[in-house]
Image (cartoon, helix red, strand yellow):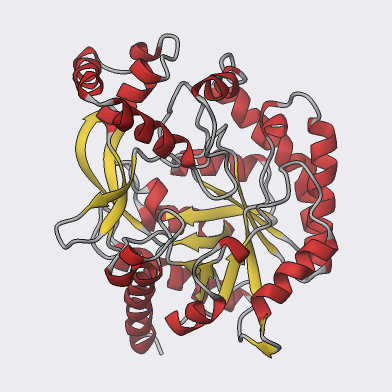
Length: 402
C-alpha cells in the first residue's frame, strides 16, 4: 500500500518536512477554504500542489495524491435549493482535478456533520489523550441541551434518565464545551454553530427517511460517475462516523450491506469505497476481512485506524474511543493482510490501481503532541506511531509473500 498522510494546508501545525520524516510517501489534502458547492479552480489546485511538493525552492519528495474531501453540499444530499448548480460545480471540480493529475477523490454523504465526538482530548492512563464518544453525554446533549423534538424516543428510558442526571450535574462551562466538541467536525466544518443553527440544519432532514437519503446518494453518483469514468478518476465514499443514527439524521453508509447496495446500484469502478476501519469498526457486526473479500475490488482508499467500545451502549449505539492502531476492536493485522492480498489479486488482473493508498487515520496525542497545537485527532507523534506499526505489519507480510 502507498503510505499517505493527511495535511490541512497552511493551517496545519505539522509541516510537510515533518510528514516526510514520519515516513509518508504521499499527501492527502483538500481545499477547505473554498465554500462547499463552489468550483475548485485549476489555479487553487495547483497552488496546493506546489505547497505540498516544494519547500524553500526544493522538492519535498511527496505529492498531493488523494483528495479528502471534495465535499458534497447539503443541497445535493437533500436535493433542495441550488443542487443542480452544485452538481455542475462538482463535475467541473472533478475535471480540474484530473487536469492537474489527481485521480483519487474521497467524499462522504453524512448529513450536517462530518463526524461526531463528545470529547476531543480524553486523558488516557499513559498520560496521552484521545478523542472519544460517550453515549450518555451525547444523549444529554441531544435531549436536554439541543432539546431536539422527540429525541428521547430514539433511546431507551433507562439511558435517557442517566443522561438527564448527568446533564443536570454539568456546570454551564461543561455544557458549552460539550456543544463545541459535538459540532466541531473536521477542519472546514462549522465549529461555531449556535444551537439554533444546529436545529435549523437538522430540520432539513426532519422528514427524510434513510431510504430517501440513500436514493439521493445513488442519484448523486449517477450524475457524477460518468464524468469520473471519462476522466479516469476514482471516487470513494467514506462511511458514517459513528455508524449509527444521531440527532434524528438518516445514515446510509454504516455497514457492509450499505456499501453492497450502493456499489451495485452504480456498478462502476469509478464509484468506490473509502475503507475506514475506525468508523465501521464501532459496529459490533463489522468483519473487515469479510468486507474486503466481498467488496475489495471497489476499495480505492483506506483509513487504517482503530476504535474501542468502552462504555454504555443502547442497542446499536455505542460509546467508544480512538484506540492504538493495533489495539482496538478491529483486528488490524488481519485487515492489512486482507488488503495486501487484494493488491496481489489486482496485480494478477493487470489493474493499474493495484496499489491502494492508505493513511494512519487519527491517532492519540503522545509526548510532544501534548505541547503543540493540532487538528483534533491528527497529532504528529500519535500518527507516526500508528504508521510505524502499520508499516511493520506490511513488512512482515511482504517478507513471507516475497
